[in-house]
Amino acid sequence: MEKNELQINNNISLEKNNTQTVNFEEQKSFLETNLGQVINAGVDLGIRALLPGFLEENVIEIKDSIITDGFKAGIKTAIDNTIDMGKSFLGIFTGKFDNMSQIKEAIKKGGLIDSISDVLDWGIKKAKENKLIKSSTASLIKKGKNSILNNISDNIENNLTSQVESIEKIDKYTQNWSKYYEKKDFTNMERQFNKIQKELLEEDTIIDIAELFKVFADSTRVKIINVLLENKLCVSDIATLVGGTQSAISHQLRILKSAKLVKYTKIGKTVYYELSDDHVKKLFNIGKEHINEI
Image (cartoon, rainbow, N blue to C red; front, side, top):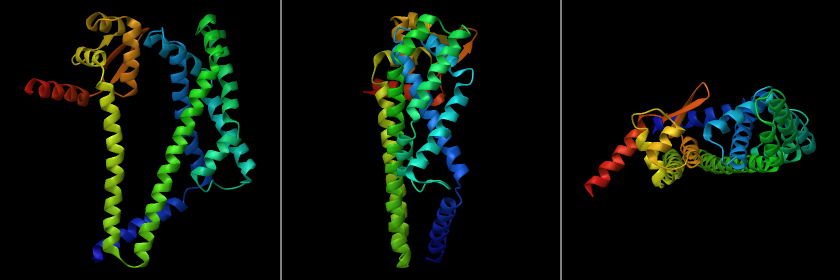
């Protein structure tokens, strides 16, 4: 019992210390990294939606061209300005945000999407001037800019909502721990601690597994995995082996790449695909063995 009491007490102390030592600069750095990734994913999805007929390697090249020439620096500046403006709207002039709900509100008030819109215009213009993308492609992306911005906006909203929910859940659990701690009921506190850990792990794991198996629920994607078991191939080779247009295969490769089941290497102007790791091969082979045994 004494060992359990000491361990749980240490866990609480560490949690409190970690929370208290997070300063504004660390929080800002977290937001820049987190939002930067979400914005990048939104741009990626938006461009893919606007250019459905383009091959995967073409989409990668176009996106890389727009992100070149200071786009990342522009996004960082946009996020910094948004945080500062959002804080002033909320009356927070010094220090860090108190919670994720405040951050969510600050981003809404800080005009992040308008700032990103300007940065996107600048990135498209630069890519066009440097002849990294064609004028027709630049016009198409600019016309569909709202689609990209909507993707970014949705991504940010979903990301922050998810984090708010997770933090609220953790806060509730922390309160339960504190109640047990006040009563010196370390047995129930440890039981609650273990139960929470198990529930959170199971919930996240089950969702991730469900999403993974959704990707396997398409015969074309399974065929692509099959031809990549021992090979590194370009889109045209995969299309020839699997059957189907390069555009259709490119679309399925995007889904597999998003699920981290395949990765690519760019050699010159050609993109070569392969399985991400041995886990994908094992999953495929286990599935095949299971089917053969039925």
